[in-house]
Amino acid sequence: MKIFISLGLLLSLFSAVCAQEVPAVYSNVGSDENGVFLKIEDRKIYAITPKDKFQYEDLYTAAIGTKAGLTFNFKYPELQGTLYYGFINYKDGSYPQPVYFRESSPIKVGITQIPIKNHLSGKFDMINWEETGKGILGFRIVSDKGNMLYDGRVAFSYKDGLFAAEPTVIEGPFINLLNHQGATISFTTSAAIQASIQIGDRTYQDKKAVKNHEIKIDDLQANKNYQYTLKVGEFNFDFSLETAPMPGSRKTFTFAYGSDSRAGNGGGERNVFGANVYIMKRIAAVAKAENAKFMQFTGDLINGYETSRERMNLQYANWKHAVEPFWHHMPFVAGFGNHEAYNYIFKDSITGSSYLIDHFPFDNESGESLFQENFVLPQNGPKSEDNSIYDPNPDKVDFPSYKESVYWYTYDNVALVALNSDYFYAPSGLATTSGNLHAYIMDNQLKWLQKTLKKLEKNKNIDHVFVTIHTPFFPNGGHVKDDMWYNGSNQPRAFVNGLANRKGIIERRDQLLNLIVNKSKKTVAIMSGDEHNYNLLTITDEMQRYPENYPHKKLKLDRTFYQINNGAAGAPYYAQEETPWSANVSNFSTQNAIVLIDVDGTKINVRVKNPDTLELIDEYSLRD
Image (cartoon, rainbow, N blue to C red; front, side):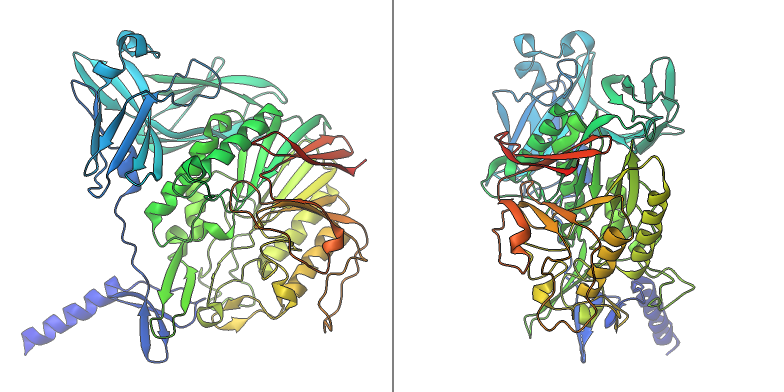
């Protein structure tokens, strides 16, 4: 009997250890030794378990040196296909990319090899590895069904007749947090290593050996171009960056905007495991060719809606690789969208219903935390929705963090304020599980916006403020059923621990408009996406923007305002739909598009181009 009780106690303790603590903000969600579950009546519906066939890390640490070259073991036995490869010559041009060799290597049971000595020597040694004893190879994994999985690279050395894989810069370097004194340069290496960046006679170095590097450069001159050298082991990489002007200098400059680059149709690079790499490369190239000082890209970078951390990180990597050659020189500032969702998914086999909630624990396993890990962004936003009136535990952190998904930054006389309209996102079944609504800005974020706009309104160096958010205030094609309209229903709203927010989606939209349009005179436009098209909406007080018999107070707008929607960065297109404000929509287009905003002191002009054909789609003045 004693043994039986002891085993029972052990099993009970084991269950308690294995059960995942469920944030109190959810309702009807529990956890036990079998996993996270949704409880409906007396039934437990367990979350779908991700069945990962690969680990993302194994894709970039697969190379092992041999006498002939490199052997790759991706530790993915189900992988059959082809490895395309070619050298990357970092001395030949400013935007290095692999030049694929005429031969390729078959992948069988996840293993392949590159015969560098036999195939890539002599007249094909365009990086001079035979003389220097080192080089960098780019490679692309393509499945036997023709699906592109990953674009990677590997640094190698050659000494005493043997090749060896060396610590490799697998992502970056990226220019982030650009200001008039410098920037933060981030990059990721395949192994922990202490790296450095040299600018002139100054060296900036990691404090210790790490894989994820963020090196702050903070003592440069304003509005000046600098060459910088990234040093990783025996490998040096030369790039350039241009510091921002002194705040309020009112120089003439251009910045770029876009969103929605998740995988598109048509095959090839339009879908490199979750990202439309083809169009993003074109967009990045056009932005740099137009001398854009930075690009804001707000949401739906990738397919997302994943239950797997590995697949999410691989998709983010493919997006970053698409724009990377240009990100070496200018910032690409990412924003959060609904396809950045990392979910628990519950499927009810009896009713056929699906329920999706944000993954937890929130601090290291949510959609928000994965986004934070993949990007280096301003950290000046609100902390979370903790301590709001809906917080079930005021003394405990219950919500995801807003860190790096809600923020603001400036360049010269322009400020950009980025909001997160898919925070704590529950894509379906939120009235049952609790969670936030697509396009809904929750209370603490709204309060933060009010304080931020008030601060910018007083800032003498700032003339123009743009608010960027993934979801349009007024949808026009593809998301009329949701965004901040929901086919004219004010009923949808956020739920926390089973309690509905007091304000419906249209009421919350009006609260936002009141702050952005009426309470701030510097705000120029909303820059949105979500709908896979481009259009300009001119918002006036006369514009029809309420459903019939709307029972709540209607907002009066003090001035004309604009919504620039550009969700045309490669995701499958949406055609225009009829809305009460359709008469105010101009130049609706389903072409792929990049928005270029030209700032000249008090003047703002907008140009919209197709990055594939370079055709001018639209052009207009926002401020004369």
